[in-house]
Amino acid sequence: MKNKNKIWLIISVLVIFAMTLAACGAPATPAPTQAPVTTEAPAETQAPVATEAPAETQALAPVIDCMGAAAGDQLNVMYQWSGAEEEKINAIFKPFIDACGVQIVAESTRDAAVLDTKAKSTPPDVLFWPTTAPMTLYTAQLKDLGSLGADAGSYASFWQALGTTGGQWLAAPVKADIKSIIWYSPVQFETFGYSVPATFDELDSLVDRMAADGNIPWSMGFGSDAATGWTGSDFIQDLLLTQQGPDYVMGLIDGSIPYDDAGVVEAYQTYVKWAADPKYTVGGAEGTVNTPFLDAIYKVFSDPPEAMMVKQSGFAGGEIVKQYPSLQYGTDFDFFAFPGAKGMQGGADYMMAFSDTPAVKALVTYLTSAYGAQVWAETGFDLSPNKNAVGKYTDAQLSKKAEALANASGFTPDLGDTIPAPFGEAEWKAIIAAVQGEDIPKALAAAAAAQAEALKQ
Image (cartoon, rainbow, N blue to C red):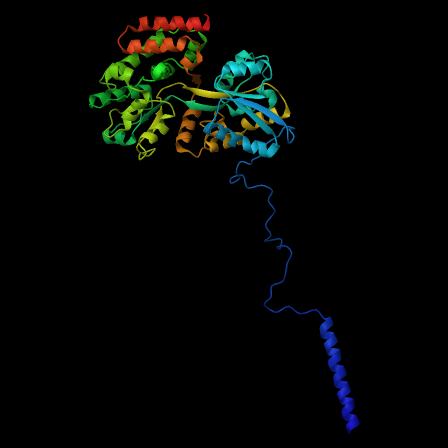
């Protein structure tokens, strides 16, 4: 019996051992609730791998063509910007530097004599200057921007015309500030039922209506030390743009139209009507001539306001906030483009190139591209004349100014800043004399003589 029991014990042990081996060698069966592990989604649910965002949502890609420039290449630039302005241009340069590794060496100067010395010895690779004068002075040295990769399609034809001489596109605008705007209080307009005028006739009618209501339409102020009178020059130029157009103004600048022409007389007559009569402007002629130009801005937004409107450049918005920090743009103060003006007046900085290295080509291509315009707008360095900047500004005032500039049919530089001495001072004297009652043709005669002398006509 004992032997039989031993045999069964041995058989049981062997069976258990065999079952154990079988269990170890077989693959484990997944639990009924365990999801199978997959390396890719089934064909019907797997999303395709996208190489770019859909067209309707794709942001402007920061692609910069380095045009063969190599990391470490040096690029010498010259400009007049300093302080906060220099910080902004450096912010605009940064994506270009990051993409291409180019080292920018900058020199800042406001002295045209320094530029002249450099141009005649070791000119900068790229120049940024607030006039197109270097285009005339250094025509033979400057490179055609089209051959460097500049995108002409980014600019209105009038911008290209301003930067072209002898059939060569030598200067492209990179920064602009507009002067053809009028500042007002939307709250005050709403209170009296006034609407923003869309044409010059509507502006003229609005001025008369304001005066009839007992409200003074304009706040004007010439006071600016040695430059007293420049605000009158800006106003008259906007009237010239309205009554005669930008080609006429450019004719005054090149001397083909004398400053005592009948069109100039007409603009002065309109201006003097508003600037000399206390019904139309604060303090009449005496107030216009003796009020500091900043005070003229403040009078429109004081409590209570002393006038309904002031014609002033883009910088006025910042001055209003400095003086009245509680005022809100769009509600307490705003602006509109000079109604009926056939073009804009203002200042602009132009880019010119003295060399054609790959680094120069890369910078020119970048700043005239759609992406360069976007960076400029987002940085908020005044306005970019590059049409691709419209809609990219983060500042509400700049955005509205950009729309006004984009809708302009021309752009003219300031007469007094562009025609050489002795014209500027002679023009201011003529304006002051006319406002104070001197016969307009007589006042213009001296300015026309100064214009001819300055331009050697």
